[in-house]
Image (cartoon, one colour):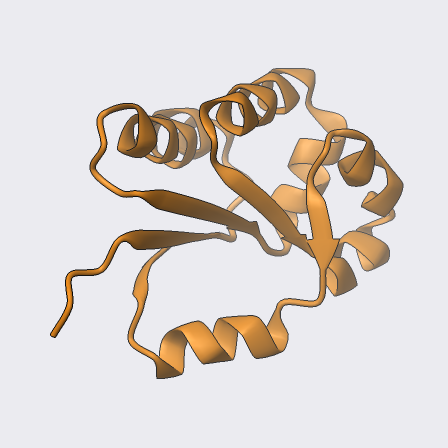
Length: 114
């Protein structure tokens, strides 16, 4: 089996401490230190609202993007929470994630869920 090089992080909690001390700390450091070749952060549910409204978290997103983290959000969630336009203005990809997440799971790719 080939070594996995792409990490996906499925972020579903709106706790700002978890955002700072796990989500962004690990995703950014994973690229800075070469632990993973690619990192995709998937914003799903409550954190979409957190990102859309919290300037401190928005700065963490910007720093992650600058470090090379691919940041994407669930479109259904963002639409329902009324933050789609705000997320897009922050350079976050907004798309439907149901099928892509299912593909990640079925293909046994590296996925952290929190």
